Image: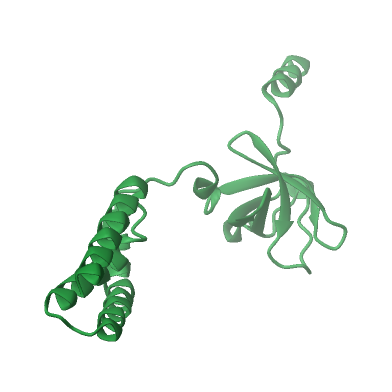
Length: 173
């Protein structure tokens, strides 16, 4: 039985060390199971019961406390990079047509390959869209409900670079 106490203690320490190094809330639940198994081993419980308690406790902790802990620890997390694109508006700079596999949009000055979330919908250049997801390096977009019905032909501005805007202004004067 002394071997089992040592086994569970080594496992407990290893799981805690892994959790401290990763801070991913992945092994802490199994460390709780190992702690219960250590206590069972100290009480001279049979090995099968120790293993059952280890897995049972780990599973219960994982299922019932992990969602609460993840919500608590990720409360102040700021979305960065690609995550921050979802929910933002983009301007279509090249018609989006899923059937032909074409389309480009800009978000925050960056050009992205774009696809419509609905394969039947073609989105014209100049349209304003909302980013609903990102798959790999492609924005998945849907036409902005507030801008629906607008198209470049109806006076929606065509996206321009700063130098294009300056050229257009100098031609007007």
